[in-house]
Length: 259
Image 1 (cartoon, one colour):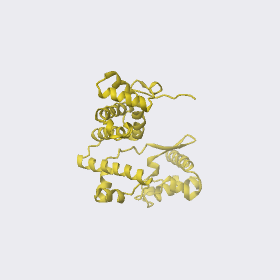
Image 2 (cartoon, helix red, strand yellow):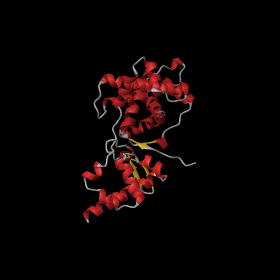
Image 3 (cartoon, one colour):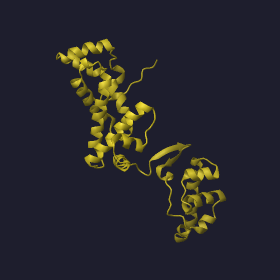
Image 4 (cartoon, one colour):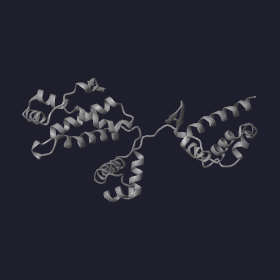
């Protein structure tokens, strides 16, 4: 079987050791006895765990090398604090330690400055959500999270919203046949529902020159304020086709106005 690898911070995952449980236990006893070489080997033997955990934070927008280094800090803290007498697997103890270190890093280095109280509420809610999913194998509602934390639903929703990373309206979310669909294509415009839009910029004549289907798409998109998905559903074609026809219609209208 082909062995895949990931290189992060100069670490080749294909060359990381795979330690058996007996080897880990023996190494850890040597680590606790102050064996520096055993400590280094034990860290390397658990780097796959760090690589696995940072995949959960792949949508954070942070540099993967930075996340890996922060995850390693969490791993080292877990090694320093783990008690082998507790009859708990090291990985069970280490995972929340590593994730906690990553969450603190993301919280404290967010590009949007959010108050500490809001961040604390948000991360309590995230932790509660993870526990709920493990227990019930489904996503909890805001109401269920609020009840678990004994907080108001509005406070939970506001805190979670405050830590969300913003995205560009021009962020591509889907692509079909070379035609990209963007976030802005999914947003309804409820304000432009009157014919004033066409009248004010003298586009009525240009609109009338379009083929019937393109004219209908422009009407639904810019006069009725519907999303491309809504238009696609109404006229029974794919959203990618709506996007392509809309762009073509706007280009034709522009050419007509320039003539």
